[in-house]
Each structure stands twice: as structure tokens, then as C-alpha cells.
Length: 296
Image (cartoon, rainbow, N blue to C red; front, side, top):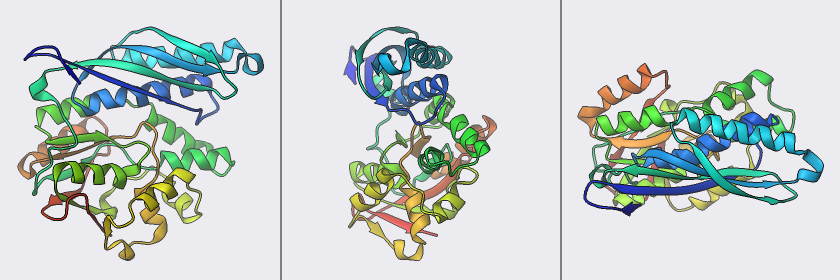
């Protein structure tokens, strides 16, 4: 964030990914939704974006690149932010994303450091994109299940960010590569608190749990769980595959936020009214900073 004056600040973020679906247009749309998500997580409004492209033009052809860029431009148009340029290189592996610039009033910035004991933890999108797309790469996921994952990965976090502002969320981040528990641990550490998360309340994409029972997680999910060594309590009460679901590496996941308990019902009602499977998945408590208690 770069403060311009007392009333305005710029938010700058950048992200890019390798393909996680076969369709180039959908890949572009997912990458764009993923890139703009950090702007929403800070409570900001996107202004414009720049493309970042690595592409093997000799083997895939420029028509494929055109579809990737079209997906990105149209998703950013949905966000109200034009793509005004960018940069590309020739590379053996396709990669696409955007550098996004947004704006926010400094007094309204959301960070991951504002959670307080007694806050309710709210998640806006279901988990499962990591395990579903990995299963799809190995021809282990039904087509309908992949469509479900794509629907959520292309869904912008714009309305969720607006609801967070209206109901005075105290801390916020988006759920991406570090998984739900990884990002929650960062909120807890930055806020100097401990968090409790209840697996039974966490929304999951349809079909994600059966894939978890078959141990089809991406490698990043196992690394996420390993990185939390010493920061988890009571995880023995949860089956290993369910713990891994809470660590599933997401692409373009939902917003993870905390708010005062007396504001949480109105926040949830608004999010659910927008068609989101938002849920109160736990609470913030006093305790060792950065620790997570995982309950069934």
C-alpha cells in the first residue's frame, strides 16, 4: 500500500500461475480472478491491471494465447478494471497473471493483523480447488466436479469485500496457496492471538471429500501441513485426509475474515444473500500467537 494523502492510498499486487485447466479462456479468467483477489482482501477497489505472460508460441500458437488474454481481459472488465498493457516472454511453460493497482481510503484498509479475541471467523468460498484440479490432471475427477471448481475459481471476491467493509471486518486475507489453516495461522500470528477452526463448519466443494479420502492432494497441500508443525493443537481428533483438506492449496479461493460476534450474523446473511456458501468456521481466542486449534 502507498499512501497518497489522508484520504487515498494505492494498493499494488501481482500474481501469476501455470495452467490448472485445459481451456485457455478459463485459464485466463481464473488467473485474473486470482490476481485481483489480493486487492479485494485489503478492502480496496481495482483500478487497472497489466498482463504478465510467459508463453511457448512455437508449440501452442498465438490463437491459444489470444484466448488466455481474452479470458483475463473479460474477467477484469467484470471487476471494473481495464487491462492497459503488459509484458510477455517466450517460455517453455505457459504462465499468466496480472499486476493489479487499486485504491482505498487509508482508514478503511483491511489487513491480516486486526483480529481480536471473541471475533468470529468467516470463510466465503468452499475449499477444494487444489485437490479437484490435481485429480483432473490425472483423469480422476468427473467433469461436473471440475466445472464446480471452475465456477468458484472464476467468481470474483468483490461482493464479499464490500460486505466485509459494511460490517466492519477486523482482519481479512484471501485463501490461496498456503491453504485455509496456513492463512488463518498468519492472521493469528500477525494479530497476536490464537484461532479455533471447526472442520464440520468449513464449506467444501461437492466431491472434494471423496477425493481427499483417496489421497489425491497436490504436493503443495502436504507442504502446507508440514509447514504448520508446532502450530496446531488437537489435530489428532481429525482424520488425516480432513486435516489435509484444511491445508489444500487453493487457487482464487474465498476471503477469510474476522468480525465482532455481534456483527457476524448480518455479515453472513449478506454473503449468503449473494449466493455464497459463507460460514462461521471458528473463533479468535486468547492464546499463544499464531497457534490454531483444530476441532472436528
